[in-house]
Image (cartoon, rainbow, N blue to C red; front, top):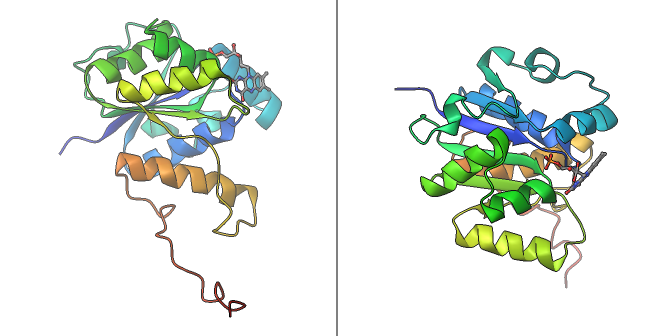
Length: 201
Ligand SMILES: Cc1cc2nc3c(=O)[nH]c(=O)nc-3n(C[C@H](O)[C@H](O)[C@H](O)COP(=O)(O)O)c2cc1C
């Protein structure tokens, strides 16, 4: 059977590490991962992770599973509806990119692959971090959900009692992997902790 193929688009939102770790999780699960970074995503990677001049070798645990595309490469295979791409995940997703996708502008490769996912009825997951949200953001999100996209905010829960930054990141990644139907050790079913009702009378 052919390998599963995903596109991960990283944009200039805070939370670059979510995108990096998502690519690792998908490639560890045996998938081929097409990766596109917007120009602002490169700046955020520098601010947040100290990564200058990003490349698959610098960013990812399994660079050999990554197909790296330029932000303007609208001729790249995933820009076509006939490519064997199963889902597009914009992670993290800036409000700018979200608005452009909602407007159908199809700007650059990121806009195009998102547009193609919607028109072909494939999974499109957008992972925004922004807070608070304006009416424009909310209306754009509503429009996208109506068109078939999934809005999956990077808002980690605390009921799993996170102890590290990775625990918080993994919480969000597990939600994405669940929506994609990708098996991963990061996906842990909720189990009621033994001590939850200890103090209840
Ligand atoms: C360090 C940093 C953090 C940012 N965080 C966010 C954010 O969380 N959400 C957002 O919508 N924009 C954020 N921005 C602004 C976007 O990068 C900016 O709007 C950019 O034009 C988005 O372009 P893109 O959608 O093509 O990546 C941030 C910018 C920087 C430099």
